[in-house]
Image 1 (cartoon, rainbow, N blue to C red):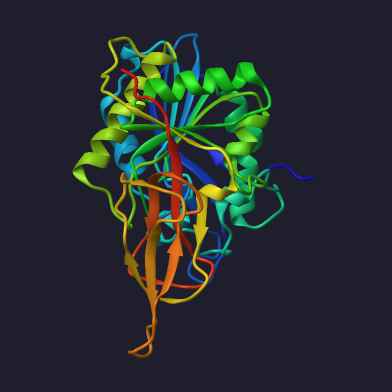
Image 2 (cartoon, rainbow, N blue to C red):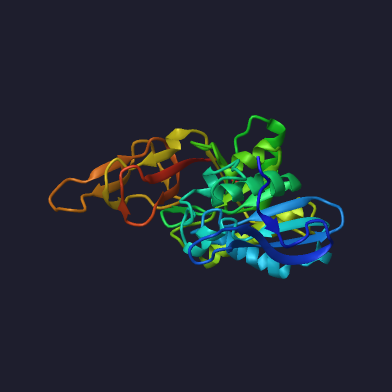
Length: 333
C-alpha cells in the first residue's frame, strides 16, 4: 500500500501555536498540480494529553466550524498542558460547497473509514485521520448537527459500547461537554463511521447534534463553544472551572427510535422538538404534493419518548428520516 499523500504544513511535536494546512494533491481541470488545503491549528505546551477537535465532517453543519474557528483564534499555548489539534473543516471540499458529501467524489466522509491512501480524495482524508491523527489523540470531539435535512434537540452523545470501561470514559466526557441534552446512542449503521474508527482505537469519543436546517443559531453556537472548553478542562488540558447547566439525559437504544417516510409530499409536523409523545401517537401527516382532495398519510410513533429530531425542511421523500424519538431519563446537575 502506498503512503498517504497528505502532508501537514504545521509541526505536531513543537511547542507553540501553529496555523497551517493539510495539503492533499488534487489535479483537476482548473488546477493541474493543485491541492486541497484543509486548515489546521496545532497548539502544544509540553507533555500531556492530546485532544483532536473536528467540525464539518459533513459540510453543511456549522456549529463545529464556528466553535473551532473561535478556539483556534483564542486559545494560546500557555493556557494548556499537552496538545490540541483543531480542524474546523474536516471535510473541506464539502464545507466550501455547503454540501453533506464531497463535491469531488460524492463520498460521505463519515461513511468512508478506514479510508485508503490510494483511494478517492475523501478516502485519502479518512485514511490520514485513521493512521496519523487519531493515533495521536487521547480524546476526540467531532461536532455534528442536522445539516440541511434534519433538525435536532441540542445534544452531545456517547455510544453504547462493548467495553464498559471505555463507555464509562466516553460518558464522563460527554457529560462534561454539558449540552442541554446528553444522549446515549446506538447507531443503526455504524460501518464506515468516523465514530466507529475512533472508538475501535480505544479513544474517548464525543459527538454532538446541535441543531440543523443548514445553519447555526446564536444558542447552538454558544453551546458548541462552551462544550469544547468544558471538554478540554475535563481532559486536563485546559485549566479552569467548567460552565455547567442542567442537562436532560436521553437514550436511543434501538432501531424503533428512527422513523422513516413511506411516501413523498408535504410534511405537516404534529409534534415539536422536545415534546413528549406516546406510542402510536400521530407524529406527522404527509400530504400529496401534486393534487388536492386526498387523505394524508399519517405517521405514528413507534415508541413513547421525546421527539429528539425531525425532518427539515417541509418537502419529504420516501426513505427520508422523518423523526427520531429518544427515551427520557432523570435530569442531573
